[in-house]
Length: 125
Image 1 (cartoon, one colour):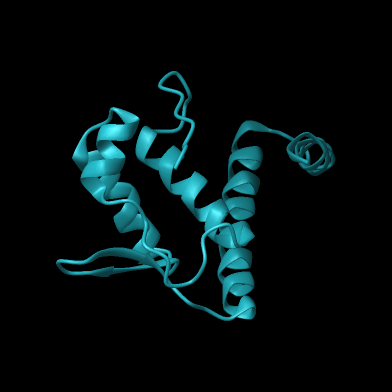
Image 2: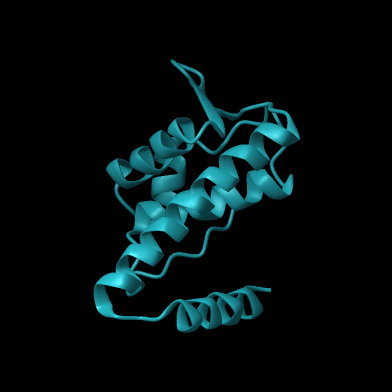
């Protein structure tokens, strides 16, 4: 599995791994019940610490996207599309709330914040 890692990116490496795997799961690239690469194998392939891959996998489990089975590995969790959507909306709401808090603190107007959100939506396509 190829996971692009950018050591100079502002996001920590474990977060980059988690984001890539989360997106693959949500897109359906990784099927329910499918085993993720072992923690050690992924760490070796990405040339990162086992601690880094462990943290990424722990966060996938905490996000409800994967299940860890002791002695067997980490597997993509089977879940209803509505559950995935609801969890995604909760994360979006939390991120938007944080963005509004930061904007208010730094004097960014609601209109400018909306412009930035619209620009971000265009850039991510």
